[in-house]
Length: 107
Image 1 (tube, rainbow, N blue to C red):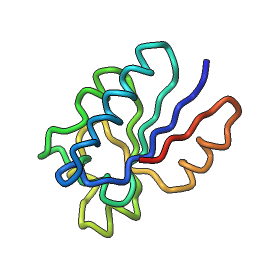
Image 2: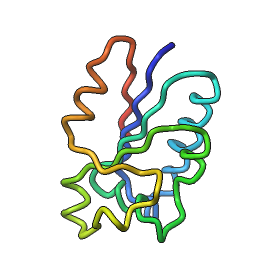
Image 3: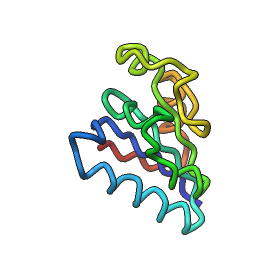
């Protein structure tokens, strides 16, 4: 089994192609692979529970992490995150992408 790490840095409200990452991550997960989506920079704007975004990822069993530094820079507190999204440091991203048999895709 291959591990996939999708790194989403784009604002979902300005860039319509962020749906591509969501759909691709779900599709890869459905094929039996381990999938993580790591939100960084403006990508963390989709992590707020008030947006209702990224539900399909959680429903498919995709792990969703949001960069703690990016959250702080945008004034998003941990209690504002959707229930299935975990705050994480960039070190978790580095640890994930250096694992054997892992493919990282930055968007």
